[in-house]
Image 1: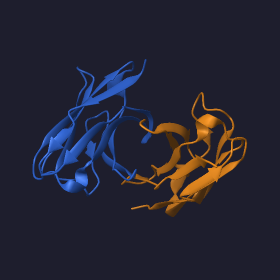
Image 2: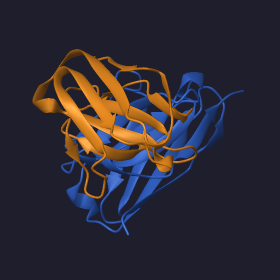
Image 3: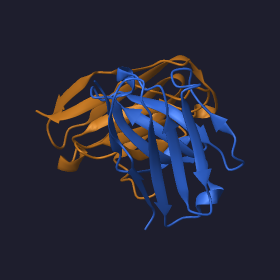
Length: 116
Length: 108
């Protein structure tokens, strides 16, 4: 079964850091671009980052310089290092498998709350 | 950034009725690089349509995507009980990738 399983979310203070992981199974992980997408409490979806099969990375301006996406193809795992977190980063974070940069497989999500 | 505007915000319909959801983009979406997702409470979004009109394998044919340029539509021909959910459109023709605000299809 094709599956993505996120972990690492939680409560963090403003200015703090968090590292999310996404374990992939059931498909050839190294052959796919992978993304992180977040959903705020109001339901809005926002693209957060992408990493292609060559390891090149992409970010929107809202997280550029604060978030770092990476992957370990030997362990079929995707990561998101989030630094200098802000209240506006509070959301459920999903990892997603990309096909031409739309998403055919999503994880179940991991919640991140940035609050003092 | 391409802004996606979905309307209506909420659609109140009965099972068996037809649902028509709109997604308008602030700039033309090249190659019809537009996708539709369904999200049920407590679940992640799931892909229905990509390339504006291509159904993912296994998606019932009552779901139909259409449109091009800046005007796209998702039509559900006859609503089944399991179709009541929130629907999002997404453009993937230009970075940053962006989503619409969603349309909630609720039971009348």
